[in-house]
Image (cartoon, rainbow, N blue to C red; front, side, top):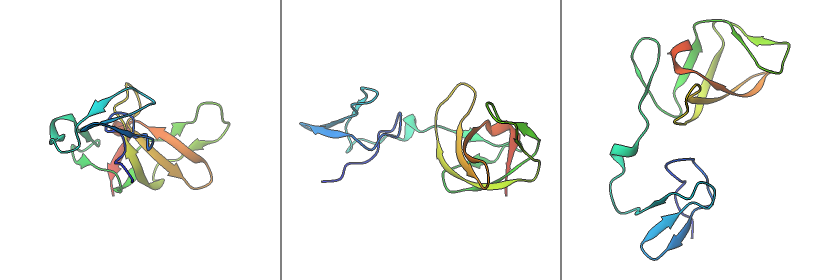
Length: 111
């Protein structure tokens, strides 16, 4: 039986424990029958638009990529793969030619 991904860390390895689901990676427990709207991460772009996984975004600033000599140029477009509740980087994206990158929401706009 397939269980939904963990709402905290998005792990796909959740397992059933009585009526709750448990994430073995972060230890979070939740009841899938209860509403989890209050736990949803709210992320907004530079213009204040609400961002969700699957939205197309455009960079509004050139960004350096840690550990790489190449950077991301202004106007680069991609799709948000998932949104995480992180200190610095909230958007998990895959840029063509660069790979998977975590980006801060204040440097993007909804396309």
